[in-house]
Image (tube, rainbow, N blue to C red; front, side, top):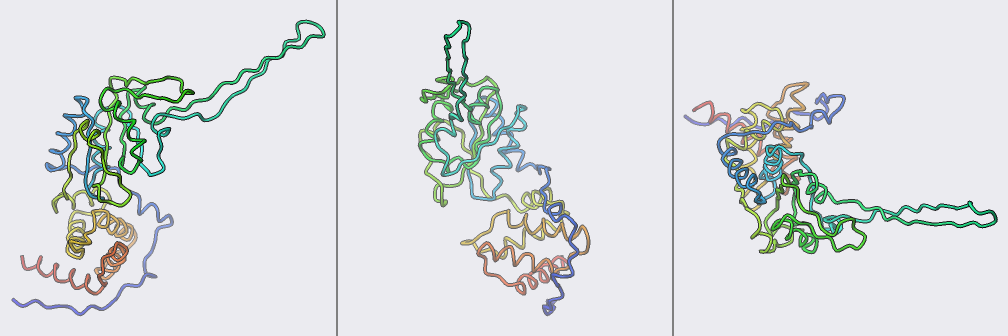
Length: 314
């Protein structure tokens, strides 16, 4: 049976898209966490170590689900979840806490006539960091992209991960050290060391945590995640995921975030009108081009047509 290629004719106009009154409603992410056996197996292992008090570390390429898995593990531990994000401007004081001001109070004594005595008191105001607060109250801290922070700042984690103690050398600190609440847990995420803006993870830190290297999800799992995050049906989700994988090369492979964005915009369109292949091709081309993938709308439209023909044959 020979394949018949339908010539590409752009029938989509950006003006024919009936946008909702509030476009952010169409782009809002779902709170639903997708889980199948592939995801469950990972979570079971991570939770086993986290409940035993071992710091858990998810490491992998951007868009592979590190943060989502870290937050889900933290949520299932049952304590309040706190989130801190690593950045190159993050310093030691962001890890331990800082002075945020000072309070001055004055008292004037007029007890003895013609004698006036005044007394001034100065008090420094201290603010605990997110980490310190989580340690005090027994919360679970998700330290996202922690290797983007400076090595000096992350060096303060050594005693936290090893002994559950945060040491503060600032003379103005309320406490010289903070001992972790028994329920305190920490889950970390990071990109590989060769990513831009990422500092090499010291072996001393890696030795104190359980690291899970996240590969790319299977087609079925990725399709399920995209459907859960955006609200599109699983058929359209799988079609988008396969499109992104096919169109992006090995050198410039797009992460799952590209598929999620295409699906989010498609879901917004489907709230008010139908989604043609021409429009889907235009959306995909715009998203992929913005991520360095050199592909045209015509090429994507031809791929969609061919893949639909193959599905009909099977």
